[in-house]
Length: 355
Image 1 (cartoon, rainbow, N blue to C red):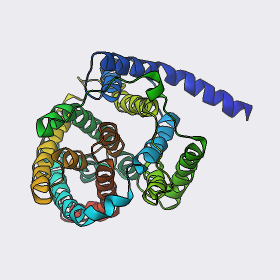
Image 2: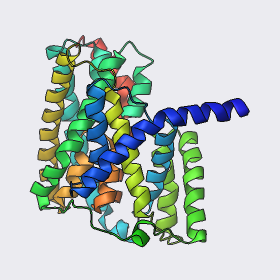
Image 3: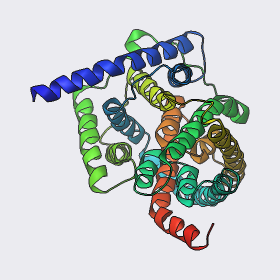
Image 4: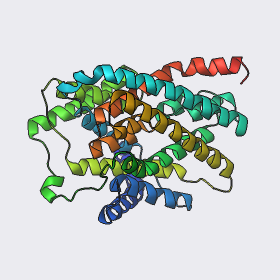
């Protein structure tokens, strides 16, 4: 027990510099009124230092805890009046699945024909989302994990950096963090409500793992917290300070993925990943516009729902900006679930036809 506590303390100590840099970057971005300051400030600060050769510890346990917290927060976006739009959600999901199929075809073609990667590498690096689950599946194959990780990392980085101008262009969404008093930053719910949310987080994480959900630490708490809020048993919301801390940890976890990456040695891989990310963004924007015109959902919401990857990051953006987080989260969960179920068959099919 003492050894375990000692190991935890050492691991926490190694993580502190990365979190401090992330918090410093987020604080600076907040001070100069940058859009999505805590997320993008932490992400940019840690990415720049990582690419410069500074070795930063990646959040592991803290990221898991943050995923549970984000899941509980997102569950609060599910309210009893959501049922009125479920039929339109079905149309939007259908459009998203078609767009996802196009994304996979394009990304696999780029990875196979242009970059010359294997079928496994092309598939697992080309899937638009579910980096945690996809990486675990790829580890059991002959896929090049360095290329898979780099491609997903570059894509998420590009998506998060493009979101602010994209949302402002789409619907002139205000991305500026409103000024708040200390009391507003620390506005925690009452004891009973807080206890329910804690139980929803712990039990939801356990349930997600039992049900083998994709990203169980995120989607399990979403299910239980969502049930509490849809049923009317809880109306509690997470205080802004927790949301800001969650953004810092998520930003750091993306930025440190580039630790040890030498631009000279993997330049071609990064270039292909960048091209792939931009092409998938164009496809997502086109599909989002079609869904917006067809269903009447806000363009900002469908853009976040259709973005190629980063369910925790994009759901957190939707929550932070108040852009229909239940809609955005449900779409990402549906896409990741379908992709994970179909992945083995897709890989086998492409191998069989000799792609």
